[in-house]
Image 1 (cartoon, rainbow, N blue to C red):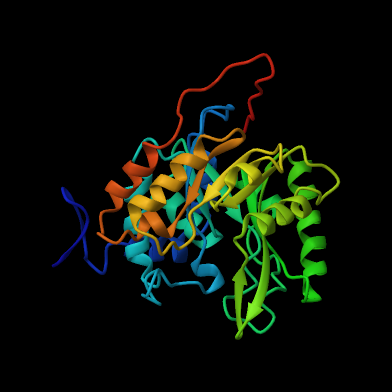
Image 2 (image 1 turned 90 degrees about the horizontal axis):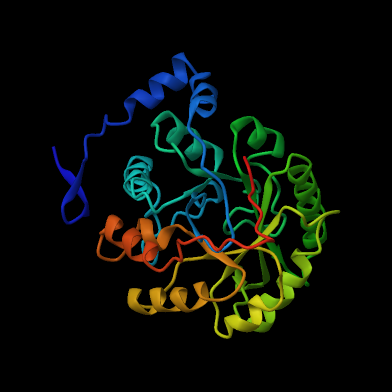
Length: 318
């Protein structure tokens, strides 16, 4: 039996049967997922100034399995669950953003005690799909997230001015924001101005493009009371954050820069007003050196963990 090194001092058994019990539960007792969701301990709540750390794991549901040059890095579900459990075991990690299948596995594994839960709502815009911009809501619904005891839902909102499917996506996003707000759940909106080049979708990561995407996204829905932004870290991030008053989490993407450079850019962005924390996946779950625990610990060290209490401070209850 071999082991998978995810930390210099931590190894995970590479037994192919290590998650066999999940298949058995799903076959014989599928209601166990709902029971696990109902019984789990909830996160104590959110406060401005106490930045949150959320691990993202919704990429496979959109057919996006690559990390760097490895096109199938996220294909092995057992390895992904290994890595997620290492990350979630760090007490500085506040929660997870996941598609329903991964969320259910983590609930059955008891890995989400005391964590924030964000469900991934629109996964229909498959990577490479001919109509990728028609990003339909095929994942969590607002009703399902409420039943799960989740804190909110995330929606990828790619805006392509040259693609007619964009208007349908914006309408669907607005309806999802309203459905979440009716249940007092957070809508984590991840906007991009995007184009299709040589058959592939490319997100414009210039500051001006990100600012324009924010302006469009924050106006969606009949209320913005429960809306957050999920934004990339780009040059001139001060201008980007000046474009919104909404709580904002930073996404990690699949960076090509050296880890030190990536962490340095996160550190600078986390110091800006309105930034509520990190929502990062592949960068930390599949680091170049294989040290998942070390990458997670490094990212956690960048966060401001001390709540700032003021007269206007509000707490978002579950």
